[in-house]
Length: 253
Image 1 (spheres, rainbow, N blue to C red):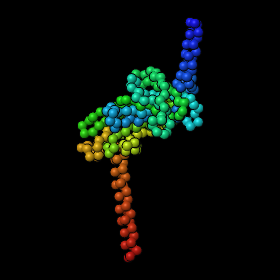
Image 2: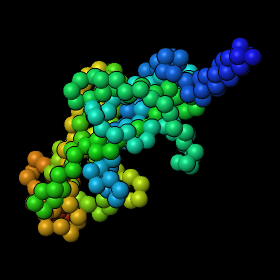
Image 3: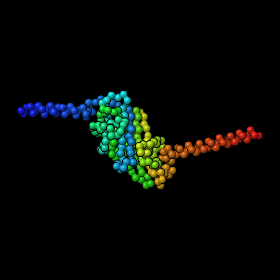
Image 4: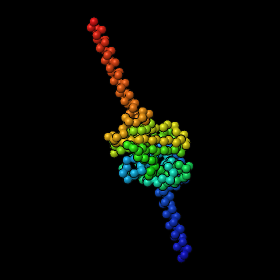
């Protein structure tokens, strides 16, 4: 009787393990696939995350075979709020993934996850960057390191709607994020394994006491080049008008 009960328990355990293996594949059971693109975005405008929320999105090639094991880098010791596959539809349909955290260095650790339904992995990390109030503006910074060679990396900071940049790199790009937020970002190509990137941006409300016009020239981002461009365009129009007027006077003589 005891042997029958033991045998039954063994069968049930084997079936349970088989089902778990089907639903939660171990990273070792999937081929490790090189990532095509990584987007790192640090959102400072989320009410439930006063210290900001980092989004790390790794995208595989369209022809990558699934299941695929993917490695991404995150700041060491930070809480992973959510990890899952992005299907491209409603957010509630995105499935969560099993992952394993592995030490990399004092500042970063590697997260390995297995994709089974999508070729896009996304991790959300609480306080993955730094938000620091300053006098008249807020400064946000984010640092990220590439675990492997990558064709493309995008590093961005998302700020509240209506914000302007007060300090930041001169060659920064500007775009729109969800809920009409503003994102300041930079793009990098042909990234080598171990390359480290940092983005630091100061921002304030458009009607704040410290605007981009009060920032040093080397930190006015795209605003200063735009002002120069407008001035040059105005000078060009004036010169053309003067030349045309001179030509008419000569013809009338």
